[in-house]
Length: 314
Image (cartoon, rainbow, N blue to C red; front, top):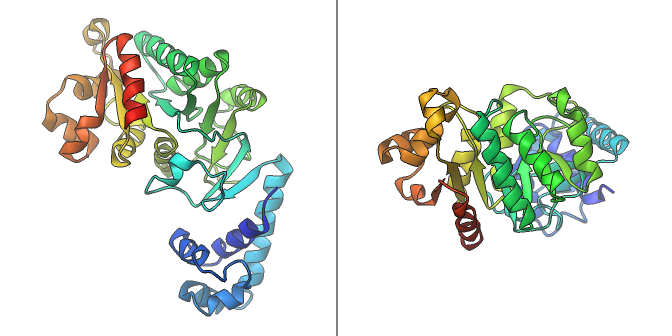
């Protein structure tokens, strides 16, 4: 079910220049539920300016109705940040999306962990992705990832094999699955009680800028991020930086001697974040010096329990 309140909010969002900041002011208005959009415009300048254009409200209503019909055709749901079902960890993140569309079941848990990394992990990276995911899955954590090839797909598959809840955060609308090769994995996630979730509208394809936005949402949905492997410009660094910026944990596995000898490009970020200087870490993460205290190096299996304690305490 998509509530009348969210239909109203979505209609407002379809007006020109009415964005999340304006919507947050509107939902704080005691008269929001009872008043019509033209009545709300009397107290909210952005809405008033948008309604100056002839037919603006009718266009917004039509656009919202189309968006809702598309979601209903998939059996999808729409949440706004004022809904109780909106993920609590994400609501606390400074840059959280106002709307979320989703299929499946969103976890209402504080035990959520994002596990991500390169699409081309080394053999060691694949093993570590499996081990870390197995540990946290077996200890009751919901596993968040991005349904990409490589580390993301490993995290989702291992979570499912362990009977854990897993969420795929998408960089596009619910009309498609990208990459197509992970369509069966997406269906398996839904069949086993997980969720596909997105802040992007139905019909919006996975363009480059969406991935950085998606990565921040991944970080916001969890108590921390485990970045399995990344080079120095990998997309996983967006989520890593966001996790620290949100006051959460960033865990990074150490590199193996074999990967070092082979000069694997996909371990470059790991080398700095686990063994580099403070200056190198700050340059890579673009964070404040005090935030480096929340970077945790994983050097052995014994560190998994320590990481779990750190995530819970943070």
